[in-house]
Figure (cartoon, rainbow, N blue to C red):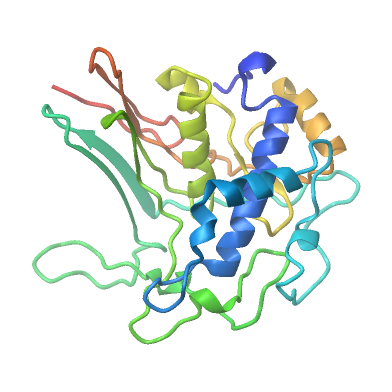
Length: 295
């Protein structure tokens, strides 16, 4: 079950959670601005620079959540209300969960590693089966921005970079990841979960690299997600007594909180490799079940 680690080493203490959420908010805003097929649009080089990261960090208020609309004033919004948010409770309608994306991680005896995330996008994908192969083609076309210029507070994005064009590839939130140290693999991870894939993988890496959590402790942490718009924090700890103090503190900081999907956020089936001994530890994320096997 989820548990809250000691605040001195927990990424989910209120202060650490607040800073991570504010970083997510800004990263997803840049995603909305710029993400698209690099053969059609220019992806600004500064997005991955340490200088730009430091600039964004300096703009974070350590005590208060920055309203998402204040950050993204360069993107016109089609509506100003916040549907589903109760000003009385601070909660929004519970998030949904889909089953059409799968992730698996592999490492062989020689150390060759594979992180693989694949999706049908919707149930049965495009409903087209490859003749003689027995698998479905996806309907990833739904990952283009649907309506040009229509960006709203519910999360619909209509910015130019990801508008549909002939031969253009649509965006994806998939981020299968292999983490290396001194040229050696130490973590293989990834997740399903739509836009929350990015934040799930982020937290899995931070838990391992910065907080030295064991594999099982890592995946047991209550996950968070903020995607700029809607301006709401999706939190697995919402509604659970053991996280009530964290929820209260984040709410005081100005975060609006929505419970995660009933089955949880993502499913980061991962493999950890001890950099000293080379020992591999595979852990299946309990949120969807599964199995870690080796020989």
